[in-house]
Image (cartoon, rainbow, N blue to C red; front, side):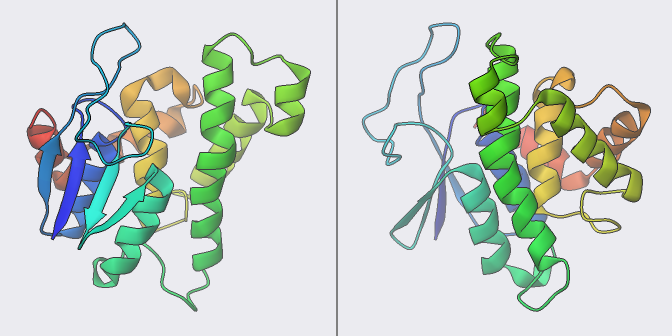
Length: 197
């Protein structure tokens, strides 16, 4: 059994979308988390070591962090075609996008939103917002998805940023078209219907 510990309108919302895309059997367990506006609180029943979401439990095994969960689930349900399999020429680019999202995109965007985007140490450690935007635009210009012709788990990470706040992604018509394609997916509509629990 797959259990997703989920807080509505949070990073775990994208994992509901993924589970719906995969057609995977799962259950939601609502959890409370501290919110940026000061509401919410840590939930003692949340298995995430930092009491955050997403936290996925599969047959007693805990998996946390969006990129890790996406890789885990797309490998667990390979027939859904949302993650290139071992030996596929797109496997390397797929792993790269998952790691780039977690290790570069999210920290860079977070630093910018915190007013620290021009910090030289952060720019050297991660990169600049302009470099992130250029890389995303380059992928979508070759697109229509980040891996080319095929929608993947990497798109769930990238598109979910624009769904949360449009200005997290480059201001460009090609991104608007990309988000419209992703937002039109039936699995996303199902996920949004389940997001509040």
